[in-house]
Figure (tube, rainbow, N blue to C red):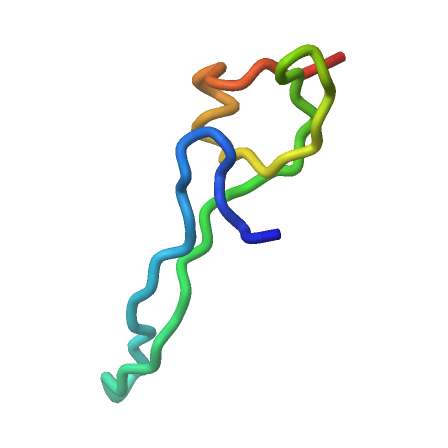
Length: 63
């Protein structure tokens, strides 16, 4: 399963790490994804959701 937000589709972005000598090496910026249980179409599913969507109540967590 890809590390992508189920709600907004946020996925890793890429950039450079810069050392003291300014040598650029590629790095990956991962979104803050949490595995949560949500209620969808009357069923419970475990999906990855970013914390921004959790905070904004874009998904309904199942109890």
